[in-house]
Image (cartoon, rainbow, N blue to C red; front, side):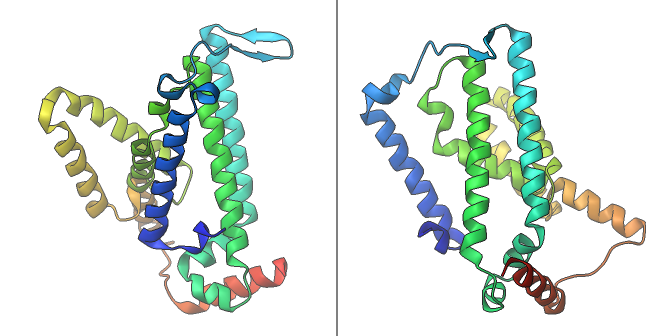
Length: 234
């Protein structure tokens, strides 16, 4: 809760620092985590007494976990849509109108951490190995890049961003020392050309063409949203 009181770059820096501390603890506790070697030879997942060891079973389990994660995300997003939108638009105004901001931040943080744990389970179940390099701070940066590039307004955005950046990184890897620069240039170009991400920009363009685009940004809708959310949540 102390970390969630921070905003902007300070929240990012402290979160990154905690990731570094956690990785150091993993390295320094080999009896528990395997240290720098990680945990190797993990047993295959067993479900209702059935060992899911072959490729087909691993794939089906990963699909099931992804589907469950999508359902959880949709439920949390629908349940707290107005509260999250109000906090994103104007956190100070939302708090001044009675919305308990830190409570919803904690809910969002815990839900996101749970979804990340589900993704980690799928990865370890596929590799049968849990190595610290799979969960490095650089991975967190990549995941944020996927979301920004694809668009964070829907679940489709991170999928599109991840597909594009992973695909392009494979192509850029053939260019040797220029690969990182080309990767960064791609991110800059997409961010400048599509402020709302690829999916968000395409959706906005579609709404404009269909005549359903509505201008936003005024304080009135935000106040109404916060008042309604505060009244429902107490």
